[in-house]
Length: 373
Image (cartoon, rainbow, N blue to C red; front, side, top):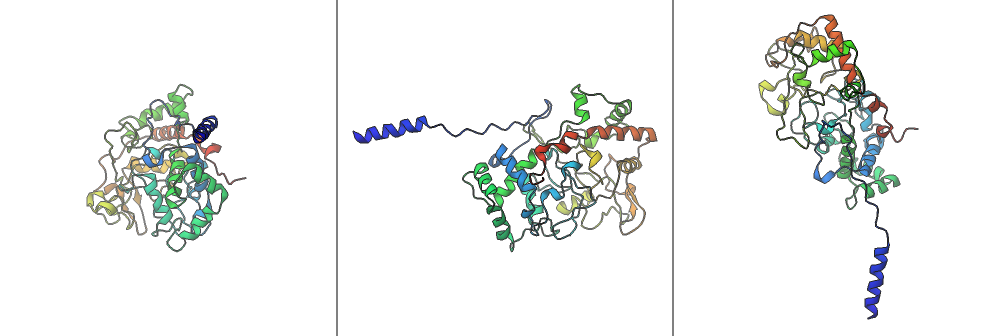
């Protein structure tokens, strides 16, 4: 019977030992009218994964040259854009398109400007990490072991991965999952417009007029920017049908037949359909005040010029290899037509757009660089 007594003692000791404290469930803290985003089953949100991903997002050791991080093209004070026309990779090569903001990226059913196949942040992350045309982070077959060893050698990462992904090896798969968790958590719902909706702030007379124009049939901005995220591709946990519109907004017409610059032809690059020439995803207008320059090519420097182009029914490029009248592009969306707006009305719309800036997002230490002193 001694063995039975020993077993009983072991059981009693185990019962007396406190169990590891369970990590609190993730809380989104969203407005009442915003459903939570879809999160992959194999990468559920947690504080440990968020903090690990945050550190990786800001770590230059994750690039081939050891000189670039994800945050290099996604600066917090610019709503996670970089203020440049095009992004610059670890080798100095420019990206093909303007870096997009990351606020509320968790609600996007497709990622990047015009790739319908990139539908998760995990899948999209492979493009900047491993892409060769152009090179962004510059990870390739030759330097993968070295870069991974940089991460594995850091005791903070050893503990962080063990905590965030217990039982999963520290590798690029878990690195990608952690960064995606951080990106999903970058939410922006505390602009002055949001506060106005909650009855916590007031808009000026000009901003009120701009709001009316924005959501009205005269300016028609809401057709592509009318969701809670001020875009028209949205997916959340209550979605039944998810629309994936892409739009040709008449930005180019280099041959008079609807062509866009080679290598920047939008959805056409993936479908091969002529009707998809120049079709891009409408970006969110949240924080648009600080995310210039604008459009997929970064070719429009100011909000005033963006509005002028839309009021004209498209962009006119006067000279150079991309010269042409985008207003006459045969593939242009029916939603893009000349709009008769007075200078005062244009100023009112811009005043309203500036109410979409979430100052808390731009300065919140929760999203800031953990390496900064």
